[in-house]
Image 1 (cartoon, rainbow, N blue to C red):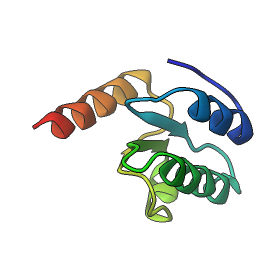
Image 2 (image 1 turned 90 degrees about the vertical axis):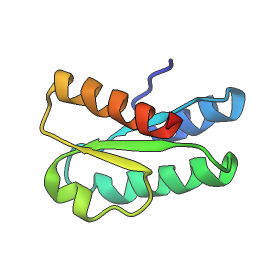
Image 3 (image 1 turned 90 degrees about the horizontal axis):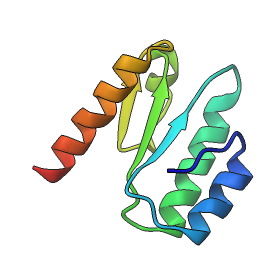
Image 4 (image 1 turned 45 degrees about the horizontal axis):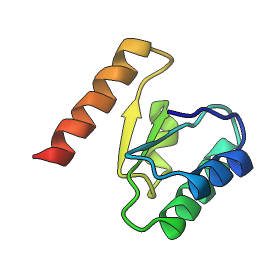
Length: 92
């Protein structure tokens, strides 16, 4: 697992390493286009890359790229449960 605060660094990390899942926290006004662009770049760089957004309800309606969206205000338990649920569905 790696963590970064910027999309450029996230792309660079993804160039150097294969990830089972990319989780993007979409927080703040104007961040939807940045997250969408990063999502598209990750999927172009590694076809088949699973991408999950964690965001509030409003953001989730504006997004089309990720494989899954966890809709929640900051809630670590909901985040972990959402990721676990996505990973279970992916292996079924």
